[in-house]
Image (cartoon, rainbow, N blue to C red; front, side, top):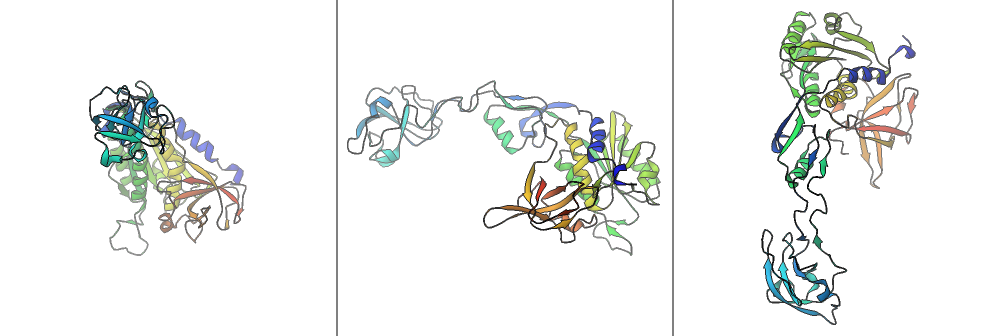
Length: 421
């Protein structure tokens, strides 16, 4: 088969996304929504800030009283109140008056500026009876945080499709929100295939390797918001795979991800057993050329079936390119693509002719602050180089028509979780 007969990444991904259905949504307490995807916008219940408050420790004043204050001609004010954060007091501030006020405390209705302690002669140590202002605020409203400056009650705080992380939940809580309507998490089954697989840590006989793809794919699925069922490992005989699929379908999973058994070899158990439900194809990418995709009914809906190559790097890349977008789309996520950069190559490497390369990569930050990208392993792009995945923070994406990347060439880079250099 020539390069022109391979399917493009876009063609295969389009088939996958066309089969995705939105999962049900439900309202949950905001404290339980971490990692979930919003299905309805969140509207602020209160203003942020809730009330006019002081941005500094100092004195609440009438600007007209202190507008002419200078070190050579200070203005003396009478302190008539002491306002701490959390106070409900709203003392009257007449001409020549001031209130000592702490950061976050409500600004008296009669005051229209804050003079920090640093701009007074006595500072905090002499602040309960008299304020001697030596430097005037720049204008009315200086150091006053106005109610609603950030968000007004009723404003859309977060759009549907937003991932609720710590920052989003913190912002929503500050806006008085207590519940959120979020997508149900996708239920995902992971099935690793192959007679060569042994439980990690067990003695290895000749021809065996530790089974790592299940852990890898489970972690990637969980990072994409999924609930992962217990991992399944089956041999190449067929009966184990049939039983595993039947159990996962009965559990109403939303997706089953297979690693191995999808190529053109003699013992491709996924291809042999699921040819009626899945289409197996070759995609113009490296690694990850052999791919399988299909659907099977469950008691409550449909499970998407993803057949990924068995080599660890191929499995990881295939998940990133095809499975992760599908899991995010199921949840209604607005952004299903990884954030991307263009960075210069920090070294040279070869790429496969006629196939788009997705190379596990490291982002280097030089002493001068400049960034560059290089392969995560000195072994290049071998799909079996599982150790190099531990160093990868990104995928360098090289177009199919490029056969060699030279040092300094601009390269597209997809940032992965933990992408910090």
